[in-house]
Image 1 (cartoon, rainbow, N blue to C red):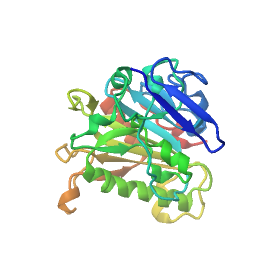
Image 2 (cartoon, rainbow, N blue to C red):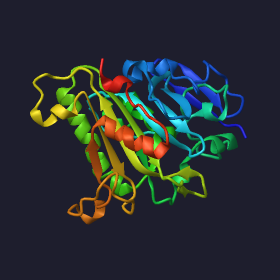
Image 3 (spheres, rainbow, N blue to C red):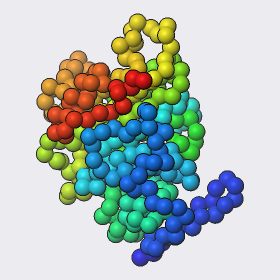
Length: 302
């Protein structure tokens, strides 16, 4: 099976791709964060997590970085530079990463075809049909909300940036966290702000679509703002230069990581988000993954 996709950019350049025997316009990106070091504080990716490194590229520009778990077919994290939000959520096609299926493929993410999908793509990563009738939404780790440029926003709509997330979390407490981080960093962060958002699998993996995609029990996120306002409100002095959060993706999970606020509306009860210092997050990550994990170099200190 061979299908062709054509891109026409604003400069009038035409790019043609096919699913087998891709014409590589530059080297594949899997296994190298080199072009994307600017998305990590001090150019240091998180330590302690292992997976396929994807320097996420769209329309021939790098936009963020993801660490992809090929076995679970979910990203373990996505890392990006925060930009004060503007503009609406884009209407765009969901995309996939051809370099996960073919090591010599071009590194640009591509929209899914309207017809059959190459089997190598199906085996290498999540595809749109995995989410059909699954009872899970497509939860962004790097949300379009945290970007202003339309192309940046569109680049977040790749399934290698997505985890199965319950709707009550996705448009409830987790959405509120993303909005809160947006307001806080816009108000107090003076220069670059680095964000890493990830997934915490169950101790024993749970799946959708017959072992196709692993469902995370929790989502986590942390930001690093090395330069922030000195007259910051006392309410937020403990939340700079860095802070973190863990959100529930299962209302039946135990409460030792994130307690349940039983006063919350019934629809979102059990999908709570707990704010915490970065070191507390790293402690929970170490417990779940069984190894020491460092999210930001030197805990976001110079």
